[in-house]
Image (cartoon, rainbow, N blue to C red):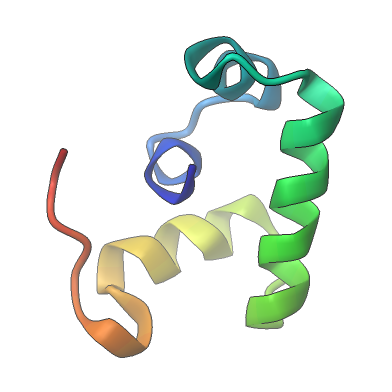
Length: 60
């Protein structure tokens, strides 16, 4: 899901790709923001692109 957020997909688009309800995706995005102490989806994207503490995320 991390890479889909970084690619700029909406919650609805992510839900369709992963066969999840939009509200489920919203909950996961919220949890990611909380756990990483981030505030926006753009910050998630930047974090994903930089690789965070474990280095860059390999392309899928």
